[in-house]
Length: 587
Image (cartoon, rainbow, N blue to C red):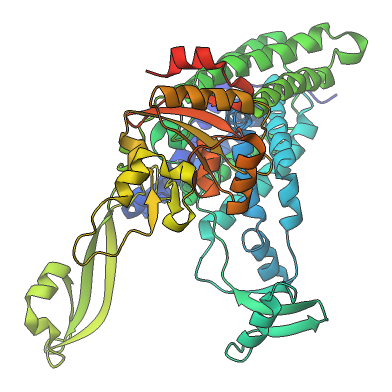
């Protein structure tokens, strides 16, 4: 009978050394692929791949697959739990990211391009984005728990590899997407809205458009389009951006998935010799996993991650031991973890994320975030051929502009110019998308009662300037002593069960000379119907829906902003009583 391989293999010491070398080599490979280390690419790649090859050979010679697999299980499982919990904290936000990928020119364009299927589309999944968001979060976390406690390793390994293959394809697509590239797309235009007629008129000047079919109601054409490139994969939700100031770049996200796939490769190799953890092994695995989750919690400034992750691991082990005939197994562990996760997700869906990483969280300074962008700094160089010597010469932009002789085509021939990024440009956290506005022609009597509106209307136009055509509250909200905002993403599906409380709060604010303003993305007729239906004649200004989604996941949501700082925030299910609100939120 063949003896079962142990964690130590033929030599515990040598295998431990090879595991460390494997991780070190992987680190060098990853560093070599980063932009900031591009000058060391060859050196780091040589060190990394050589070290990994030596380590892998040693692990096979000394039967160390199981040890490497165990280390990989802790690393991958912990990352799965952390990544899943960050997304589960804000499943609506993750669903928005999925919707971006499901747009016709986003992920679908790869299929159109690779398989010559111009009619392929993923837009049907947009309506399922939230459901998929929740399921992905739960599956990712449950897989992480099972990897750590050693449950159903063969099944878990296959599912993890399939899931990571998809995520790696997603991040590869994101990192290699070229917004200037063209692909053949099949689109349908209706005659009823006039779009088909416009497309037919475009045929005369655009030879790349070809009619596929034409009926009395619609026109189907193949045309060359540019892809919709997603700039942020949303791997860690808003957590990294909110805690560290930026998300992973598409390239960094791809490297992160490549590392996870490599670690899963070792788990895959050892799946046939891996057996469920013993009680002692569970203590070790859980201890190391909790330490890793604590590190992530520190990075993301949210220790709920390590606390809830620890609860999930304990619950899974407890259910396996105490679940009886039906649930005293790993399926029982999956069941209890799923119950806990669906409870967490249900809570945040009903209210708001437990940890708000967005720019409009309580305590955030709107004005500072409007001005925290970084202007990029670049260095240009020019390569010229000296016609007298025949040699190539490189000049900086300053040298090139200062020396007119370099422009003489009889002395020098221009070969190429290049630009090197010294300081990367970064947009402000709150961009111009936050700009509650209203055209002067659309101002209602309720809107005109706002002091800021009268102030902007009475402002004298300086010589040479265009007359003001709209009222903007962007600067006003960032500087006013205090203002109460009612953020409404979409008027049509907003929950107005607390409308009486909003009306009472608006009246109380009026008595105290505190502005109460609604910002929404609605058509004039919707606003008119809302005022008539609820008798709520308050200033209502318009804003881009994308930014309204960032302000709050709740629809509607009440915010108090004081000197540009968000001091209070209430989703509609937590709308306070007017007396409590005035006492605790209004200065």
